[in-house]
Length: 330
Image (cartoon, rainbow, N blue to C red; front, side, top):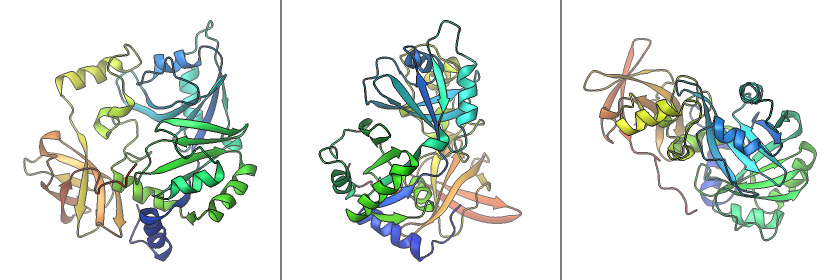
């Protein structure tokens, strides 16, 4: 949880609204997959349709267990003869072991964890197009969910980021420093990693270890865009399809806003007596105290007042539509 932001974070937040910021994405996991069956394997195991991905196409997907709970949220970048799986922080070993359990002897697939060989930096803000154009002239017009190879160890990815406009640069550690210097020269401002969490919560995106964990189903935490409902079977598919078709979700992700701090883990009590929980919380220089929570769908309407209880202390918060603010043009 981010407490009231210091001067550095406030300044970085302002740059994210008007310019371009660089944010190091700490400890994300990276797994290379090789072999002709690599996409077929991920299609069988995860929620999205991974077949027939084009070269440089990027897709989000989710690994789920047999009862539909989340193993991890992934981003997959497909290249000519290999694919890169980007996992949540610290999850590459868990994900690689999970995938390996489902590789059959006839599958032409190999996995290689590469956490030590790759790092990721986000470029966010309305001027990120200009910065990317200086780093890689001609490539700032990438469509969403597309990537470009800059060299054997540098890729620029366009995925919907927190804040509306942005790119992710995946590169080896040696090259990263040179790229960051180029971005800085082009006008990007180096920013603390805590800025990503602030922007993530404002955008209503689930976070690893907060909403994305083994107790939640992808539909409950706002990951519908990473799910195909027409692709057929995958691990956990029957549960997810049934919950969607019957509209039987027991909880859903909502925004929370308050004049007071909203503690992570606090109990939310709705007017109908049902309970929920605060999953993420931060102080926004523009919006005040905001957070994310999981509550019963029947009480998720914007403006609904919920009581907040932790350690015997009582407060209140109101439900807000997500995202909290209109994103910048994309």
